[in-house]
Image (cartoon, rainbow, N blue to C red; front, side):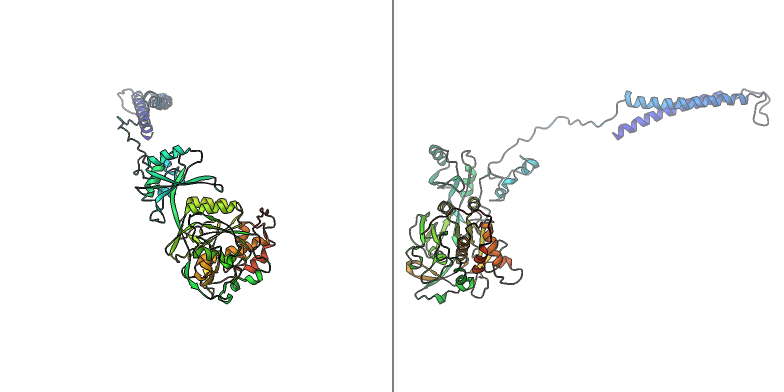
Length: 530
């Protein structure tokens, strides 16, 4: 553009200069005086007086010369713009090289930089950023396919959980399993999520590779690891003799005053845990119904202790001694531990909601789990209050789930002096604290135990929630969280919310506040428990 303009102006200037030069030359020739023998006279004029006349002619001609010069400039511009084409930028790429072939990577692999996907294409896949960060940076899989995070090992090493619509026939499922050398183990449709989940086992390979391979099957809507969760309690041993004086938690929580207002009557509390010994004297009549999701009939100290922290009512005092318990055996008993899987936990959630649970206690902890997160959100929307142990992995641990889920009330543990349990997890998700160090609780075989950890603290808070719901059945999960946090006793140093949450639960103040809270909420249907 600039170059073309410059050439046009230069051409116009040349033509104009040429024209003016010719005009000036003509003027000089015209103004030359005629030869004279006498030479010039004094005064600068010619002898015969012709100079003045010639000057007049010269002035007239000068005017025409100016007009002619202007015309020449215009003509030069016209020639430069019309007769000579402007020198506009022209791009001649010459022979084009053959384009690079577009190669789409197989699921679970990242395309090389600058190949395959444009910047805009990458932005379009940001909904799967969680998958891209997994297992060495693979590319995004289809929505619903979730690889374990890099370094995560808390899952069953030879199983995968699949999300396949119930409309897919069994013959197709068998064909998919055969293509991947897998064995179908279990299938269940969950009402709370509307999903049909499958648990399949493989003999060779690893979980990430299996998920990547299954992502190519169009009938499969999703796949993820079968995550493993651990109970969050340190069983400190049993005690042969028992007196109520061994319990300091009732006084700390203000249970005597709270029980004058409510005892949890006609409220169903689900306990998703290991097996509960329903024959224990302190749990007599408390267990309304049981689900054995783990296919393990043996009672276990952890599940029995959590049930007793809520509903004990004979030799010791639980936080809600007249509740009905829906017990879910989701954790298989193994030497010195009991682990539960995603599949069994979702089974328990689904079953508890269908049975009318108003509160669900989850005294276990583990990794973030996409299907469990979805199930918890659906349960909360049904008006069920979810309570979970913060975890016993210590102050440096990342947040553990389900406690860190936004739909769950996360509970930490304190001791007799209101000091934080040293093994408790920390974080901004902690809602409240409850006694959790050296807590007396029932155990198997009619015995008792002292137990320490955030598990028993969570169970006690679940019982307090049952008191609130008896007092005011219209309370929503948000109402319950608000009451617990607003009435909690401030403990610990200022700014210690990451450690203690809002403080130590005050059952009496919380129950007293429940009557006037959530008055506009619709009361859910009641289920007769006992």
